Amino acid sequence: MPLVLMGVRQVGKTYLLMQFGKNQYEDIHVFNFQETPSLSNIFKKDLKPARILEELSISQRKDININNDFVFFDEVQECDEAVISLKYFHEKLPELHIAAAGSLLGIKLNSSSFPVGKVEIFHLYPMTFGEFLEASSDDLAIKLYSEISRLETAHNVLWDYARQYFFVGGMPKAVEKWFSSESINDRISSVRKIQKDILTGYEKDFAKHSGKINAVHISALLDNVPLQLSRVIDGSVKRFRFKDVLPDKRTYSHLSNSISWLENAGLIYKLFNVECRPQIPLKAFTKENIFKLFLFDVAMLGAMLEISYKNLMDQDYGITKGFFAENFVACEFKAMGHGNLYSWAESKSEIEFLYVSGESEIVPVEVKSGRRTKAKSLKNYIERYSPVRTVKLVGKVGGSDKKNLVLPLYYAAKLDSLI
Image 1 (cartoon, one colour):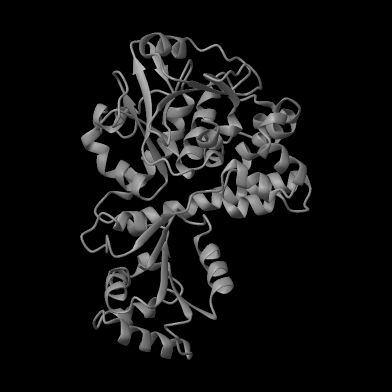
Image 2 (image 1 turned 45 degrees about the horizontal axis):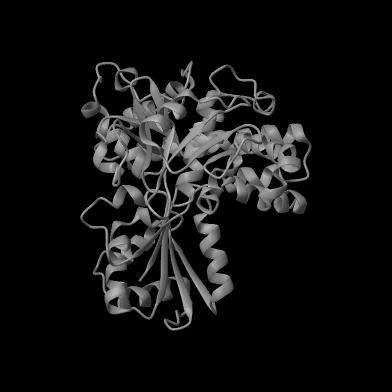
């Protein structure tokens, strides 16, 4: 089937597919619908793959060998007909290896014209902490991260990289700049500028692609997510409050379309709350209008709140920094392929994440940003439900046993293997 790669703008979709095509095929043919808008005209007449390929070949002055070449539709969200045509490429020309990518394809996924079932969909997320570490080319740090048995002695090195990641995040351009040869001050200013430019690009997307949904509402909602996260004074991030976003928009129904738009665009992650004994499937024990919202990249959270590199390295940005740790864990879980995210709350007790293992075991995961690891909520959860095991993700090392894991935050993406 045609491959469709989804992901937010500048997350690396084009680069990844270009490298794949160059490495695996005799030739690669790239058609960018944003760069060359006139390409869309080729798809207006009909959606017959043979005719489309013939005209695409003529447009680039080079034949396409359907048995040996790779065809790549980039920024395909700019041409609805090109998206629909993938269905017919699958049905009528299955021998052709074709892929498509676009930054807002998640918006189109819910439309009737999207060829669901006729394409294979992959989601590309920002680079995880482990991938950030690989990009550093620090062979010792990479080795230490893979050998958890050496954690006691490795923690200071890895924690230093984790705090750098909190500032840089996982957007490839920012990561590449961070590990350049520039001075630290130049890298700090360059990375923050890259982040601000990316955010500006998203604002332009709202105006261009939001359709019937008010772009101002979408923008206000995105701006409000970090503000609500940062207002947490004690304990976990609280449920998203609708009345704080726009005047006269006080309920979920007023904002549901904007929330769905940002979620489908991949810019926010929704974390549902379970308010009873957790059971499989967790989704059955949630409410549509009760959830938390996190940003897709932890460094974008810092950029939107203007938290400096020094503050992040010193872990000095107020008593509310737990929200940063929670956003980091949410991003790591999403990138590792966990679809919906869940938390648990009853009375005054709250567990930041419910992690479902490959064997459908529900594992409570408590997240603490600093060195303090005492967790009353986790104790209450254990007394109520006697879980097979528990996890605490914290800012230090030590205290684990076979049933109760205590791990540094940066091991969030390794829970699958550790559990």
